[in-house]
Image 1: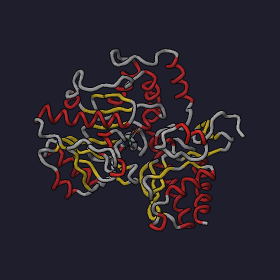
Image 2: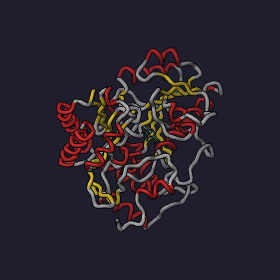
Image 3: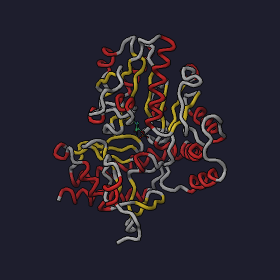
Amino acid sequence: MTEYSVNREVFESVMVPNYAPQAMVPVRGKGSRLWDQQGNEYIDFAGGIAVNALGHCHPHLTKTLKEQSDKLWHLSNVYTNEPALSLAERMTERTFADKVFFCNSGTEANEAAFKLVRKYAWDHYGPEKNEIIAFNSAFHGRSLFTVSVGGQPKYQEGFAPLPSGIKHLPFNDLNALKSAISEKTCAIVMEPIQGEGGIHPATPEFLEGTRALCDQHNALLVFDEIQTGVGRTGQLYAYMDTRITPDVLTSAKSLGGGFPIGAMLTTNAIASSLGFGTHGSTYGGNPLACAVALEAFDLISNDQLLADVSRKYNLFRKHLEIINSKHHVFSEIRGKGLLVGAELIPEWHGKGKEFLAAAAKEGLMLLVAGPNVLRMTPSLIIPDEDIQEGMEKLDKAISRVLS
Ligand SMILES: *Cc1c(COP(=O)(O)O)cnc(C)c1O
């Protein structure tokens, strides 16, 4: 019995079955803690899949949202607005980019990026230069174009015919890339750390080699930083800790701190290929989303906060190693900043979901990245005590699965 008029059972009767949510229904959140319909408390190591970068209901974000909601919500792009202009100014000041295109999700940011690289090649080199090279296990979104650039065939099954002119290669294999790239290649698309694919970082040699090959073949380098961006790795963007700079970068997830927004960033020269009328979005860059994102971006692009993200990674690692010395379930703990992956030993491959369900029962929200890796993408400002308490719950959840 609950006082709520809807519960988890209603999901099966009225929702398209493309998701399988956990048994509880969260109703309230504060910082890195949430409460469900029954009042049970959870520690949040999931962060809404790397989205709630400042936790739940951060007072500065709720204040900004409330204030903006009394001023102006939506205009369409027939008019521009102050929050969008300020956010674009800030993002171009703090990154390699000169120009920004706003949209509402990661998928839309990538869709814009993939259309842009085709259009830029078409403008400058002609229609033959249209091939996009991407990588196995990559994740770039769920629209037909982005799912086709993504390197996970299971997400493409049944949706053919797919957009063509896309080639997939093994990740971190520079020789494969050398053999595959040609004058037909218009862009190489990659996540600097593959997120959904299992928390696999690109090696420095691969990144630098890819940049050089792009330059040799007049191909653009697109970094999908939708998961790695906005402080997640302890840098504002992950590329900032490499020796290379992409030509196009996509951002979403943490960008709005939980309010839906996406952005595609690029240089002046490349941006000019998306001239007036070539692309658009009704909601993209709306004042509500941009006001909240500006506040989040300003709070996160702070050296002290970013340094603390790297320190918290060490704390996560230390706790996971202690848990592993007791249970021996992880073959590797990896990641950067608060994008943490713990790969299960072969015996537990395919069973990541069991750990997720057990964690929920113990009061911990956790993620998987593929079937074999437990993933943690908490708030960037999760308190150390919440990490400690969450790890105690994880320890119990693992005992539950193993028993
Ligand atoms: C989540 C994600 C996307 C898709 O973003 P949506 O907002 O779900 O459309 C694309 N690329 C990467 C790397 C992601 O992690």
